[in-house]
Image (cartoon, rainbow, N blue to C red; front, side, top):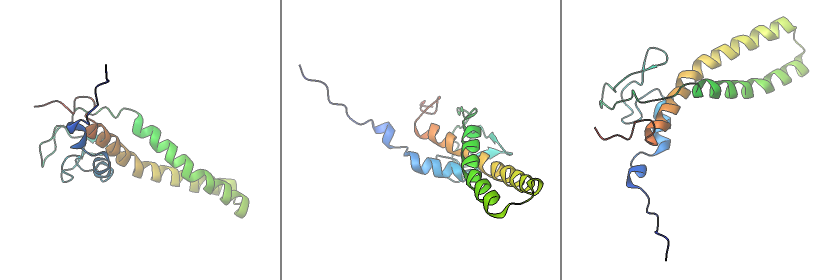
Length: 133
């Protein structure tokens, strides 16, 4: 008895992940790329104002925060090492500069990474994004 051949699902191909992630990074609707994804700083709109795609299904939870910490830590760790070994600044100056850099970078990245996570969920039809309306 032969195994059934798995045919690629047509639904999986109609929502490519890369464009959805890039649209999410730009804080735009993962479906059309035109409508704004957020109402305020991090609140995802329930429905895209342009294409009317429902976005209330997202479950980003803590994922964007973990990604933000991971990226900011990996970017600033070499800066801390090189800055301290090469320039030997006063510890208070270095702490102040790095604190400002970490906060600014975190505030910049957090909504963009949340958009990426929502875009991935939309493209992969996770958490109710695949339901037919």
